[in-house]
Length: 57
Image (cartoon, rainbow, N blue to C red; front, top):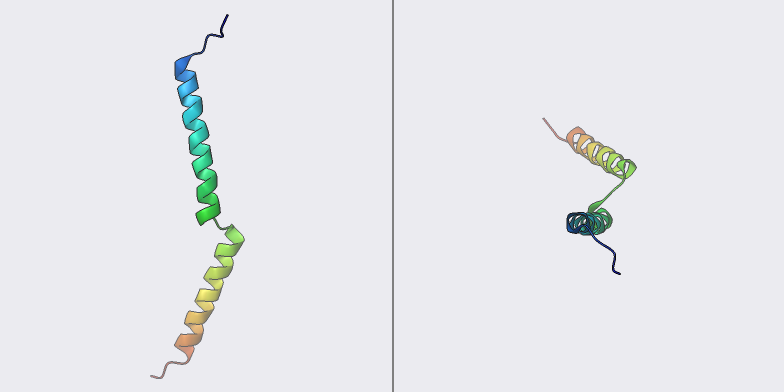
């Protein structure tokens, strides 16, 4: 005999797996750690401050 499968659970499980796979792809493509974001933000702020410091009034 074959095993009885609840089609709703199978569909939801398949959808959940597909979303998880897409999330993994996106995290590799777009993801940066909080440390990287903070470092880049600090570098940008320093560049802006340095540029403003060289402006003549």
